Image (cartoon, rainbow, N blue to C red; front, side, top):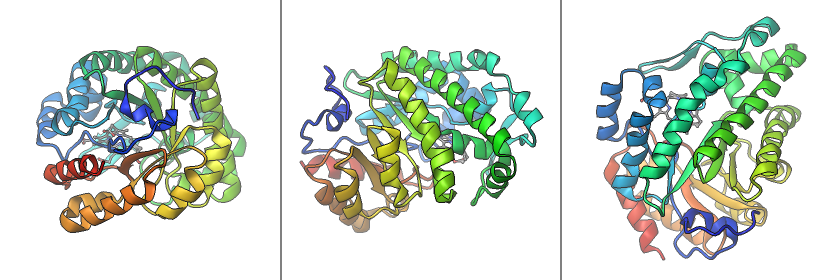
Length: 348
Ligand code: CP3
């Protein structure tokens, strides 16, 4: 865990071994389509990438959920696919379908990427970070992020999201050296990108490995844990006290190995992890974050309340950040989010 930091951000308390009778709370995808004010701005901005690269729009969208719900942390409004885009890969977000990239098919395609040009795109994100940091309330922390190399690579090689990442897993088995070059490029690019975000003003970091769960155990070590460990090592060499949260979604018992081997300070738990496992196996090793089912936030009512209470009771007294097990879904009624935050804050 990190050394104490001289700051008032409540989200840093669990990392600094401070008691948190009311756990800090933020939600993955807390800015997004479930908010009418987001949909309105999104329509004005044009494309989703225009929204990400406009410091003015990105600031406004980041602040929307903070104004409404007063979360303990804001997360930079951007996307993990800004990295492939900055590396020169064609990227579009197709309405109702998700991201589409021109898939990398060979070592030549990987060699044609343009690491020397990434700063042209990244600087818009860094500008957004400074603008967000100065607009946020003083007590609200700002989270920077990137996708883990494995998860970003699944989009770069597969060209789109998929349930099993078969195209990319096959590419990695059949062309291990070419795939390693891609992963290594993503490690160095992600380190630069995260360091740039820290310099511009983010207060902690999260690394999203949303597709870690489909790797077999050797591949999990090679493509998820090892690259993440290298990113964490580089960031920590310059910012030893800056908390880093990892999210190896779906990796089950691999969570414990990941937490030990990568040196992250916190671990974001997906919905499938038992609360007793989070309490007994993960919380002795770091700050635990999670893991309400996003669909219970759509459901609301007593079913939501019951599960929120169960999470709070189980994690009480442990270094804990309340969050979802994955991102908010667009059909979530904003009133349910308000109900969730009220219930957490009333629990202390
Ligand atoms: O509020 C926040 O959490 C911050 C912003 C954020 C977005 N994406 C905004 C977004 C963050 C942290 C992400 C991370 C991200 N992006 C991940 C990792 C976390 C996860 O959800 O597993 C992944 C895999 C992506 C890739 C991605 N971006 C997909 C698959 C999609 C399409 C799915 C969808 O919800 O439409 C996106 C688009 C995207 N990223 C949207 C938002 C708000 C929706 C875009 C829109 O407004 O049309």
